[in-house]
Length: 284
Image (tube, rainbow, N blue to C red; front, top):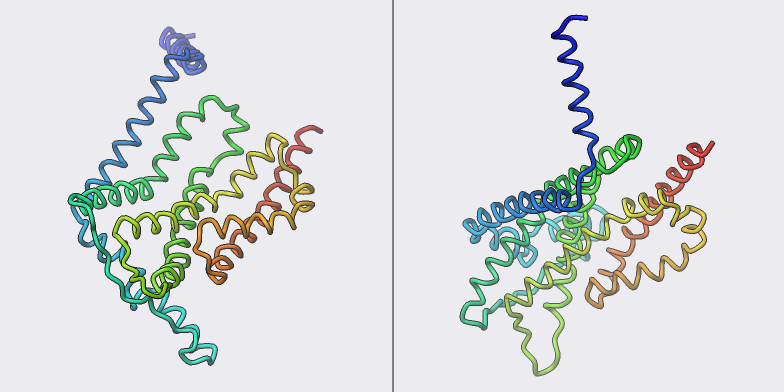
């Protein structure tokens, strides 16, 4: 064998040993620290960019559901006309002022909204950094099984956020802003409005991760499709409770989020059944 071939073989063998070398606890912490730092840099970077364009962000995005020409209102009205009901289903949000009571409240809210939206937009990258950290600790078979998980989780999260923004927010704003008590003027603060907008969107993004959570729980045997089918009726009650927690006390809005949640539950049963079948085949 040629000398250069021996050197190459030794080099490759040394690289494989280095790649397979176990890291100490402090080395794991150092690795995790850099993943967190890179994630924070991306979140802060997007937050700063959004803060520089805050006028557009508030006008077009944050206050979008409060405008009569918002996409959801136009879609419902167009659907009403398409099914022959005229404008019976058409609705628009009531006009209401949004005030800032504190001296620096407007500035603080601008920063808060910029970085919350920065986190939402950077969620796929943050998830990718998390996956890069845990991937070396998985077996090749586990890495292969989890392939595409970052894209799936990111898609589900962003779909949930968009669902909360375009479906939950318009109905919730219409109900809450239009609800009044005799002798009381409903004048929400900007802080209250922003907190509710976050509540309508971010939790919906997390709830849409249900199939992924069921996937991993099924992998370790904590969830089975038979068990999920057995507790289907209980899940309906739980779904309605969750919908009531993240939406105003409006029956229409609760059903708007309850129905997709139930669909996700049924999809999760199929996911659990597939994982259960794979586990049984692996034991043979």
